[in-house]
Image (cartoon, rainbow, N blue to C red; front, side, top):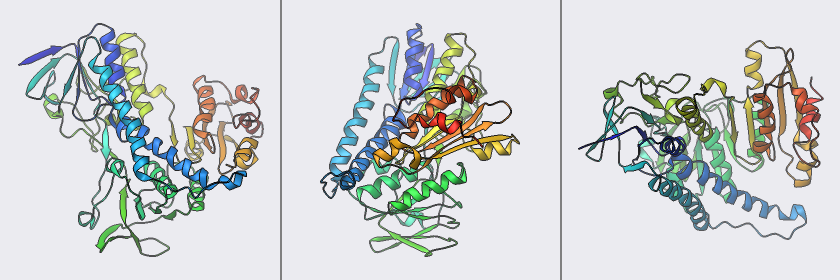
Length: 455
């Protein structure tokens, strides 16, 4: 049996439901296919559940700091079963909300099962063949599990499987010193676990400037997290109830003994079991679907959105992919991926908000720069809150006065960075925000001050 649609969307992650609603709202007959969890990574194992856990960890941390604020506090004991239950409830509401929205959407039919292409215009799902002239692949990604000696001898966690943890690991060994690993590392340290972060590189989050990496390491180590960089050869062994991680580091013990291991060493796209070869869709050496600046694949009538296209690994880039596709298809607005400015956050506490280029990236382009930098210890709002770790930094093109990039590592940094980002999108000089009058006492009010002290 073959059913025919105007468009078929594969995957209900961040781009899929919005795209489906716009296509269906334009009068198209749309099918959307989901093989497992409605809402994709963000709703089920990414943004929403992890930030819910971060909030619980922050609460525990602040309880323990209560005396700093003149408040009689407690020891901040954590009930991990209740922490997980809260996370499950919030995440579950989001997932069921997406499912209900799609299943009650006019002009939309939901299929539950694994979709595979059988031709450039057909997919099979649950024994049925679906046909359309337009396909939108939105299958996301999953944790990468690299080959490491002894990994097959131990049980390990990923960002997905750790969502099922309702107990406190005695000693969590985190392999990977980037966004996922550091968020979980600080979170579990605040819950009460001993935590060691193992990083193959010379420093944490190597895509950031060295001063940002160094400051983040200081923040984590101040909370008792052990950071082991330069771990060039990582292996594992089981020793009774312990897991032994072997590390070939330039300093420190050659072994780390722990109770649990979290692998946080990157992501890979869910593209290997889609039958893309049957459709003629090109993928690169890492399995990402090759797309152009408007997200079109190598086959006319097939687009790829979200994490599977290698154009971004965030919820906001996925949603923006859907906006770009909708603009081109329905609004005759030629939006492009290259129009957007890179922006993201690291949700440790305090968070890092990043927009545009790092200082190192700007210098590598040979630009003449002016730099503004201000420690959070000089920001009165941060002092009032007792959260003075970190700094803010902005990179300016000395010839054009354009803002090239910014890093706000400090309380509220993930929100404050947007005031800079919006000026960048407006293609306005830094003087626009420098001359703006901001509210006192806030963190944002120091951005104009910082921009008035460029060197």
